[in-house]
Amino acid sequence: MLSRFDDYPIHPTPEPLAHPATTDRNVYDRYWFNGFSTDGEFYFGIALGLYPARGVMDCAFSIVRDGEQHCFRASRRAPRDPSETTVGPFRIEIIEPMHSLRVVLDDNQTGVACDLTFEPRSANIQEGRQTMRQNGRVIMDATRFAQFGRWLGRVRYDGKDVAIDPERVYATKDRSWGVRPLGEPEAGGAPATELPQIFFTWVPLQWEDRCTHFISFEHADGTPWHQEAMIVPAYPTSAAIPGVEDPNLREMRDMAHAIRWRPGTRRPAGATLSMMARNGERSTIEIELLLCFRMKGLGYMHPTWGHGRWQGELAMVGESWKTADVDEMAFDNLHVQQVMRAKDGPSVGYGVMENLVIGPHHPSGFHEFLDPAK
View 1 (cartoon, rainbow, N blue to C red):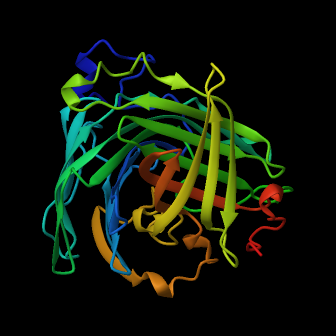
View 2: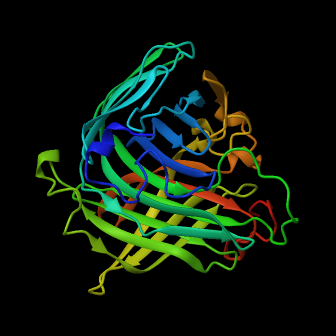
């Protein structure tokens, strides 16, 4: 099956580009973004995923504000051309590759809509390849890159209209592809002999003169199986960004985190990050959390609208809830991003802290599948 990309000399395998290099049913290619006001008034998330082996493309937009979270979700049969990034009223328009783009959600039956333009403050940051095994099987094998920026535009939901001012609304772009758990749980085979376990924290932060990037995947004993941190130059205008990647990016070493958990939950109440540059200069970042967003609003761990599930030729739904009514320990509420204010000495920054903790993580005091913090 050919696509418009096949006319370019960019093939990594003997197959046309529409065919993944793996037959794993959980192969995916995904856009993901967040946006948040620096005062913690609101947060919104955006996602679009293509799942070639499942024949599905889905998308979502969700905003939390004034004690409520509102969601739009849609799904379709995967397009034949992988450059087609439209699902019903939702579309992503690439203005300049690896630089700027536009996200449009036209008016629709859910009452949630947007027209947003992403303008970067940084070049793109490639994370190290992330490979995870459970019960001896590779369940995640992904490449990911991130980019920091700002949003300009408008969001509409529940009869409300929110102006998105780039002076106060930061953006994080996340692109990833490869294999990761998707769709319906697999059945059959011998019962698992290991308790499911994942510890994940991801902290992209924006400061006046720089951005910082921190990620850690850890085993149950706290040993990292993937961990990295970087200091990324930020530029006053998008035209000043030196290219797709930045030669002035600084990789850090000797990184660590100390998370303070909210009792009765698996959600952080605050944290301290530390990292050391190769020249020995240490950075200690104190994190104050302002607003919580449930990632199920974008389909993560959602019981019926999980990523890659077949919903029909074209389907869309809306959903909303009061944040005060959320059951903190319900499985679909465990995955969160929280808007935060950060301090590193006299510097003040803003960003998000993403966390997902399932199963044991002994340094955090978690010893069972879903025991909450004490």
